[in-house]
Image 1: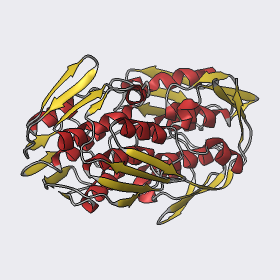
Image 2: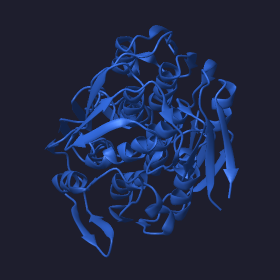
Image 3: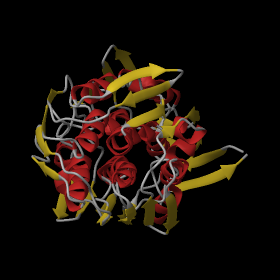
Image 4: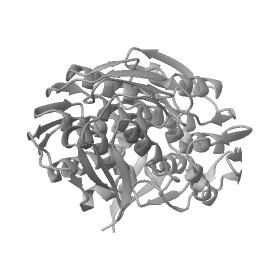
Length: 418
């Protein structure tokens, strides 16, 4: 069975929407539960497909996992299994984040190379190099990462690029190492800060969260805790862009505007009126948005996860925009689908030039990843007629209650099962 969305254009989004916990945080927090024996409770979990997938990964490693509403309870045994080479691991990228915890707890790990979104090459070289500096061996064998260490020792590590995944795996291995680890050029995303907060609650000694240098003093053991996931800034910003594209008026609650300051500044530059408080913001777009240039960069730069939404906004803006992709080289696959919808766009290497049009035209389009799928729905809202969006299981992996929230805001989006 394959679901698709039918998106009828011409409507204006208006109202209020509440976002849940961050996809890019909750999956790593669930993996961190492997570091402590006992029951770890994680609240504000988003209702997305990747959460039960991660639960299956943890069950395969010997944990007992229950999900009740927005709460996940993970009971980790004294000796977790160290082989994560079963089918669930291969279905999504975040499964690789069990690598660091398994090496730390079990002194060895076999983790299948993960699958996930088709947005470009995402090798594990930096993950492996960091583990080797901590004293582990690490190789790729038969489609799996194989790592082993009799003892992890603190080290000075500098990442060639501020990779979120490598930062998380090295961080979770280092918390149970002997001595002190300094991790330079670390990722600074709010989700990294959320992970550091939970690990410190568990008894880790991490300083520098939110900066490019993390200092980790290894401890002998951690204890299970209860932790609330931060709000999803990518989902929140998606609704903000949707308001701007449809000349709407949308208030978004549940996420911190401070985590998406550059995004909101760009919407303001496009002509939107922005107001905000500690955990909410409002986007009002009265006229056709103005063309704005975007360049994706690691946090605090413009998120690569919002690049499809930036292209969607540019496609209906007044003027010409240039979008530069500096993180994932294959993300411009999305542009091909936008052209189906009548966008005036061309790509050249890491750049896309989009000349805005008054209205897009409906067409059948295909999602290649989570964010591309959401971007296509937003574009469909700005098209004439009915746009069919296929492979929407991608959207379900990252956006809880997407259709329901869209309908609540007045968007004419329906799910159809074929």
